[in-house]
Every structure is written in structure tokens, then in C-alpha cells.
Image (cartoon, rainbow, N blue to C red; front, top):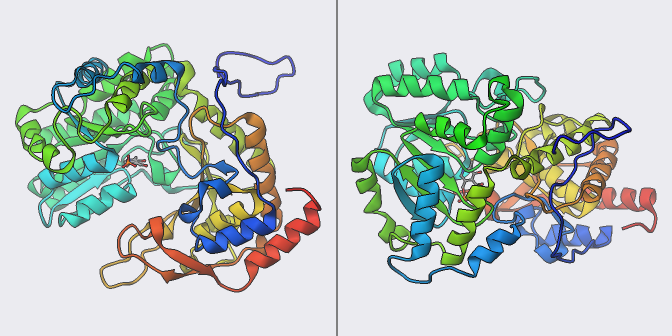
Length: 482
Ligand SMILES: Cc1ncc(COP(=O)(O)O)c(C=O)c1O
């Protein structure tokens, strides 16, 4: 929000853009929503978008683009090799990040594949504030393991700590001493730490982590996919940076890093990805893999139109009125829920509002995927599609036993500049209703369980007939209403 006070004193998020193109959405009756959820195997990833009212599954590749991004797409230079569009993107990235070498890739996980193949050897450890699903999968498939050393506060649902994504520096030193620096593939900092509620990392922490890594010669890798949100929080939560312009903040962050990668489905509100590297030798090793997995070096799996949109989107990320839009809506949604006692991760992060299923569904056993059940129940109650971020999103241990997540969250993502405040209020209203009727929510069990990234396409069924009971209660309480 820009610095606008309302006469009433109310803190109302104010959109700093106007909508000039719209897409119709459908809100199905609750009985149909129940049927669609059953057809989708109680996995919100398997719903068809035509059956979804508000798609709050993710912010990935579904952000609203600006008119300047669309305009740029029309002047793309379409060539396999040596496209002007690529050189424009490369120059933009060099200017913003101040790093010399750039490799294009088709999305964030493709960057993780390249980085992991080059840096991870069997038996090596990668230390990070917190894992992301695809990051961990790429590290483990290359024979590595992941150690998470986020500060204790990061795993508390309720907190006032402004930077819950920070790394515990003592744990970092301890891990290096225990594993030996030669056995650490890399240290990874994830901006706007996704799986613990979109929580930011402070500048001071990045500075210290970098010092430790440099003193041991361990590469420091920065996942900048959620950099936009993290920049916003550095500006509003760290008084030292209140008056520092965003580009200067970015340059300070990047000065600490050896490798930066990002999903352009998030950063820059386009689609694609890329890796920036400061060391030429490392760049050359990664470069070998780009034509093999991604495409030629001047497009790396991205369409030239997306590359043009990305160049403009990255420049727009340097504008505070652009990056503040999601966090202020997330905060508004969290506040609406907190006011009715719904447990959510605090302080509100970027990316989305994270409802604590551990407490919301305290009566559902963790082995019955309480966050997955909550995500399914939210769809039935509202037509809003959100995502499970809990045990379902974990991979089983090697011996087949369940690995229980530290947090069981239903993540209601807020794609950038897509939904209006009334739609957000509707979402809160239905979740508040569900909270009152939470005793009706039951568990889920797998009927089809993939071994890798099972949350994407695994199919489940309810334990008992709770979805039907929930639907009946909705009809009773809302009458004819959709
Ligand atoms: C922090 C983070 N890193 C990496 C990725 C992977 O990016 P992509 O979906 O473009 O493969 C994501 C995607 O959500 C993410 O949130």
C-alpha cells in the first residue's frame, strides 16, 4: 500500500493498479464442489480450473502482468541462437543483480537440477534455512542430503520475529565442523522461505552466513524466487533500510552470494527461470548442461515472449508499489482470519496466508494428512483452491515410513494483482465458517501414492463420510447461497 491513510483510521489495502482485462470465474454449488473434489482424489492439484472459483493454489506463473510486459512481448526477437531478446534479458539481470554470468532455464526446478548436478556428489550435505520440495528432490536424486537450520522462531506458528527465515548461525558453524567443509555441497538461502509461511530473511543474517561460507570456501547459493516479497519485508521491517532504494538493497544481497537462481514464474511475474554465477569456472561447468536439459544458451527453454515479459517484470520488481501488493493483501486476509480466532502463521509472510492445520484440525491424526484434508474442505466450503504444505508434501523415509512435516499448513496463495479485496473477504468468510464447523473435517488416506513429489498427482479418499456431512451443514447454514 502506498502511504494513504483513511479518515476512518481503518487499515484498508489499496491497490496501486487498475484492472483492464478480466477473466470470468465460476462458483459451483456446494454439492457440485463435493463431486469435483471426489473426482480429483481429494488433491487440489487435480481439480480442473473451470471448477475453481478463486485459484489460490500458488503464485507460480499466474500473476497478473502489466501492460508494459504485454507490450514488450510484441517486440520479441524470435531466433534460436543469438536473439536480441536474450541479450536484453541478460543485460537487465546483470544490471539488477550485478553478477556477470547468466544461464537461462525453463523454470526454477530446472535451475535446481543444473546446480545440484554440478555441486552435489553422493554423500554430500546441503545446508539451508529450509528446503523447498523440488530443491530437496534434486539434491537427494544426486545422492546428497539436506540439513535445515532455520532459527527456532521460524518453526513457531505464532511469533513476532520479523525475519523468521533467518539461519541459525551457531547451527551453521556446528554443521560445517561436524560434516567437514569438503563434504558440504553448498549452503542455500531461500528468500521468502516458502514452506514455513513465506517468511523473509534479514540482510544481517545473509551478511553473516556469507562471511562464514567465504571463510570456509563453501559456495553460497541464493534462491531468489520469492525475492520480491523479501525485499518488501527488508524495507518495512528493518529500520536501517527504510529509506534505501530497492535496487541498492538487491545489490547488497547479491554481493554476498556466489550463485543466484530464480523461478521467473514468481520473480518478475512471467514464466521461466535463470541462474547467475559470479565465478567463471563454475559458470562453465553449469553451461555444459544447459543445451542438454534446457535448450540453446540464448533461450534455455523459455519463449522469447516470456523473456521480454521477464525483463520488464524484473525492472518493475524494483518499484515498491509493485512488490507491496501481495504482502498487504496477505496481511489483510490473515487479519480477517485472526479476528475470528483462526490459527494462521504470524507475522504474515509473503506469498500467501498460511492456515495452521495442526491446530485447525487438531482432532485429525497427522498420519491422515490433516493439512491435505483442510485444503479439500476449504474447496468444498468456498470453491477456493489452496495447497497442502505439510506431510503430504514430504517424501517418505527410505524405509517407507512416513516423514511427518514440522508444520501442517494449508497455504492460500495470493497471486500478484489478481484478486480484489471483496474476493479476499469472501475467502476469509468461508474459512471462518469452516473453522466454526471444523469438528466435521476428517482425515484422508492414499489410494494412489507416487514415490516422488507425491503431492502433485497422488490420489486420496476420505476416512469416513465427512465431506458429505460438511456439505449438508453448508446447505443448512447458507440456504440457497452458492
Ligand atoms: C522457493 C522456490 N524455489 C523454487 C521453486 C521452483 O520453481 P518452479 O516452480 O518454477 O520450478 C519454487 C516454486 O514454487 C519456489 O517457491
